[in-house]
Image (cartoon, rainbow, N blue to C red; front, side, top):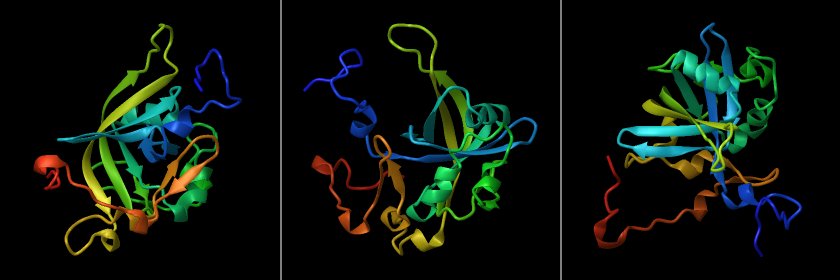
Length: 208
């Protein structure tokens, strides 16, 4: 079959079910007046590793985006299976400035190089400096509905329990959750992991 926005040959848009599963950027940021926001974004991913950069994309100029711009910093905490309900709570449309940490019963932990705190219970977090916000203007022109925020990672928190004796992070053991289409989420089963190397030694040694 073929699906496009005009013919709508399925009752539900399949886009998010096909671009899936997507990691969740659980973004905390502090605005100019000191207000703290915590919001989950499934349009999130790494975009570079030299230096390390991540992006999240917001539908409209929501608090996470504006606070990241105002404070110049944000933190992305890992959303895990154990924290799924709390993560979902932080997606509630609270009034501007009301703490999602308090609403979801989450404790904060101080970051090392940026002002916004991380989620204390999360096994990993990326501390970021805001670099730029890019309006995602559609091909046909008109106003952007989504805005992509790019940040440079300046420090990483990793719970020591998930660092192997060889110095690798055991991502599967953290049980991260990821977003699919509709109301679907996925998690990682550690035993499902497998390793492949690029041809001709292109990926024999992990970068940096």
